[in-house]
Image (cartoon, rainbow, N blue to C red):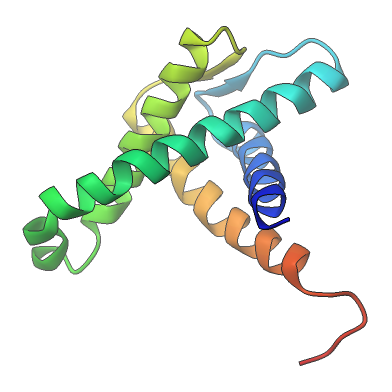
Length: 128
């Protein structure tokens, strides 16, 4: 269930990033194809983050400390850019055009994905 919530929240966040950030394109034809593309791109982003983010954090530990964590924004942008490239190699109509588009897209995906994920994880009708 947790995996599904993450995939859905990342999909919504990527969709919003394609609407807001110039340079992030979702070239899917119909609605069903766009939803399928967003779900697969979400899985690609999750796999790239799961595999490479710990390596980047370990290797760039000093840069994280020196920049008070701001280097993480650069790493997230690079990982988002890599996810766009991998998606293109997999034949998905998803394109990230350049570092700055990836940087802003990754920032939007992190913020919106976190908010949507928190809303989807919270049981309906239960107040804390």
